[in-house]
Length: 47
Image 1 (cartoon, rainbow, N blue to C red):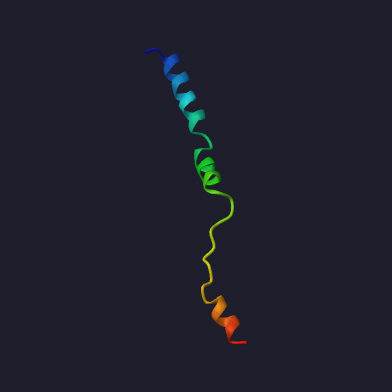
Image 2: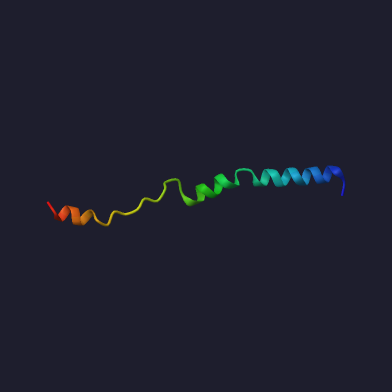
């Protein structure tokens, strides 16, 4: 394998991996999940 082909392969792999973490986060969604307050109805009943 020539040095040129090694370099091109390495560059291709590097470009392929760029932004992978960001893309994974975007796939999960942009808004974090918030816990549902289950005691909300109980506090409303106390009124």
